[in-house]
Amino acid sequence: MTDFRPALIVVDLQEDFCPPNGSLAVSNGREITSLINKLLTFPFVIKIATKDWHPRDHVSFAANHEGRVAFEDVITIVNPYNASETYESRLWPVHCVQGTPGAELVPELQIGKFDMILEKGTDPRVEMYSPFYDPFTSPRVYDSGLARALRDKQVTDVYVVGLAADYCVKNAAVDAAKEGFKTYLIEECTRAVDPSGWLECKEGIEASGAKVVSFDGPEVYRVTTGK
Image (cartoon, rainbow, N blue to C red; front, top):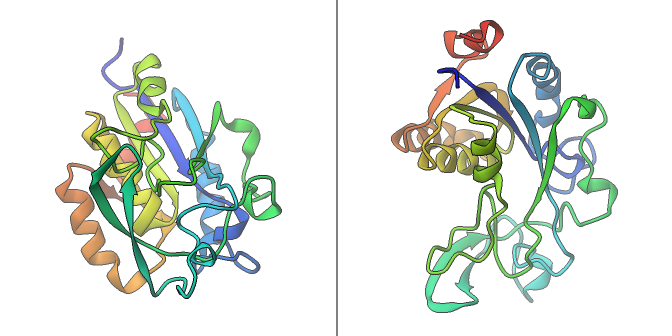
């Protein structure tokens, strides 16, 4: 095993998260695709795309909670196996419903270069921003197997990009670092739902042990050399 075996995770670059027609469009979200396509030409040992792949009755949809408003309201989500474990979660418009056009990866993305496409958020009972697992721990409700897939490839370093920076991308980076991988979020290859809060969000990401880096920085250049 070499000392450097990088993986690329492209998080949720889907139609519903992109202008002009996405139900949960992130401002300027589509414009990151060209840089991500460039990353896809680099010699990562594994390249993974993730997709929100929600059932229509998903707990995160404001439409499934009478009187609640997307973006504005939060709900308490309870571990279905342990009522004492809960967390607060923001409500969203209906998005990325299984089998709908909004759930598809954007066509500009070079989808054929991925080794794996991982669907997440499939359990209607829990929110799952992270592509690794849901937030519950006692017990965990859903584990995607992503950490195991990375270890099977003897990955040492994980590079995270996609949408949205302050939700699913953040959680992907935090959990990759938690799993023991050296983790880098490439700033030019993501966009935030709430851009005004991005600076504070970055601080939280770096506090987890992940690093926010530049596309033109040495961390990304290292992938091109494989050293």
